[in-house]
Length: 242
Image (cartoon, rainbow, N blue to C red; front, side, top):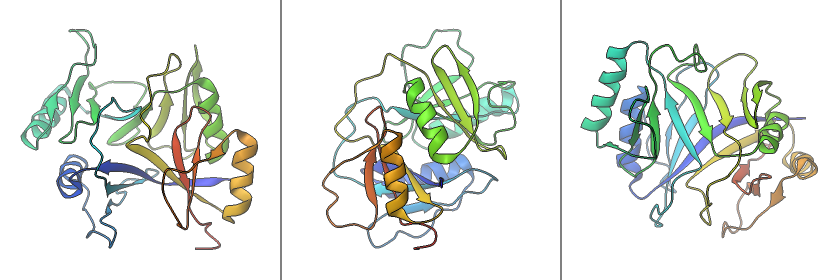
């Protein structure tokens, strides 16, 4: 049994503004807000994922452990993406990158870090608009997620790992230790949906090294867990149950 990647979830103090930003940057149409205020940006490219933007009252205080790497087809496209992001409320960000780095580091209107990559980046070639979800994490957590999703390891060198759907699309990558400090709850997390039933999949994930956790979710239909690096993720009801 495995799970499929259902969505990447982003906490936001102003979900409508953040949804409008990423909808424009990714050329996605934002759905109408759900009753709980969640706004979904459906996937519009093969082998990628939806983005769910959900309201939170907690401000961002720490650097995220996950961020997008956006691809560019040319130097002109890279510059146009940067200019578009800035016009939509993004800002330049210094995270210690060198002055001659070919990628551009920005922060979205909520302060979430992301990169606009240079043309010709071989790691994200053919991956689509979101070339990679770059994560702060160990090799062990890369192997964990490889087993969760049954995606092959497409990079495994010097503690750095990456997985990708066997059909292609966005990669998920981990940069290896040392790890950044983690907030009590990450503002970005993954939602996965078991291909069969939730209870069996939760038991499988526990055997792989995940643990259940309580972040104040109360009585909900999903199970909140932490991966081996302590990052939260949610296991939704299984495809057969839903």
